Amino acid sequence: MLLILLPLLACLPFAPSDPEGAFVSAQEADGDVARGPVAFVGVHLIPISGPEIEHGVLVVRDGLIEHVGALDVTPIPADARIRDGEGLVVLPGLVDTHSHIGGPEGADASGPIQPECRVLDSIDVRSSDLDRARAGGVTTVNVMPGSGHLCSGQTAYLKLRDGATIEQLALRDAEGRAMGGLKMANGTNSRREPPFPGTRAKSAALVRERFVAAQDYRAKVERAGDDATKLPPRDLAAEVLVEVLERKRVVHHHTHRHDDILTVLRLADEFGFRVVLHHVSEGWKVADEIAAAGVPVSAIVIDSPGGKLEARDLAFETGAVLERAGVNVAFHTDDLITDSRLFLRSAALAVRGGMSRAGALRSLTLAGAEMLDVGDRVGSLEVGKDADFVLLDGDPLSVYTKVLETWVEGERVFDRSDPDDRLIAVGGVGATRGGANAALCCEEVAP
Image (spheres, rainbow, N blue to C red):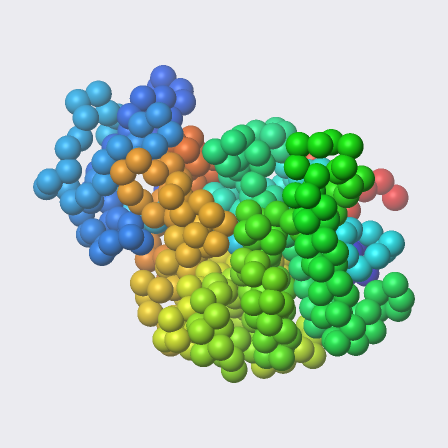
């Protein structure tokens, strides 16, 4: 039943009383607003990397941030088109470190550890899921396979550009390779009938066995040197785990209970891999241990805790406790656990739990970018970084604030003044834009 109902959620109206025309953006007669430099003047800037600027200027050109600063000291290029930003707030594009938009699929039921699977090969980038994320101000996202395996495969880091193929959205490293991490999990989700583990101890043992095997595989490759005849048979799963051992690929690890969190820290210490702890419902119980390990956290903040027994002690205070301990904290949606359109609310709930305003906003932006190894490109409003930003009509921590526009690399990918985009933002008939489940969602179905 849940699988049938999930597609319907995208169609639900979120703000039926939201007036049409509450904000009308500049619609230049010459078409594409991203062509040439654009200066947003008089906006309230939240750079994340520095103090907020009440009357600021943001200039973007050729997909990058050219100038950012106070109105009275920031140069405005003579050829720039001016956008009057009085009363608007500009925030860096949101970075969602854990999402399932686009219907990603990873491992199957044939075994508990399948690092060779790539969600890159399964994401539907034309899904209305991605439209919802853009409507929520999300510009960079880590798309993950599920948590029903000890390892369900490789994640994909995407820029939510206005593209039609995964190749157009995939973030790439300096060598041109699609970027992503490795999804792992422990706790109750991966405990099933054989060949899956039945206990927590067996879960950890299976993971250790596979990393030991990967160490052996790496040693054989190293011993072979340039002699191809001595190379072991190619092993796609082992190759990925070797990347993890060599710290070239980060592990994104689903974990909830305090003892499961500590198990992850032990494994990371034993094998020397980089890890980001995800969810950490009981992270507040072991904050000092997480901080001592120097491990970052991608936490989930929801207003209706529940769903599984091991998450019963999830608390609004987790972000604050981890922040005070010195942990680098990001938030994520786990979409549709939190709808991407409501991502800003995660920071507001964290502040309600005692986290600082600056820390909570950083947790939606720069902290997540750092965990995805793209902090030098996105996550803050700085000269030379990608022109990924969000225009808001109010304070980002207010429940009444709406995302007006979302920009990725200097291109506007969401505009609330556009009727089609507004439909995505508020929900309703046609919000899935003719997707595969349109007949189950919002279109009339013949009897």
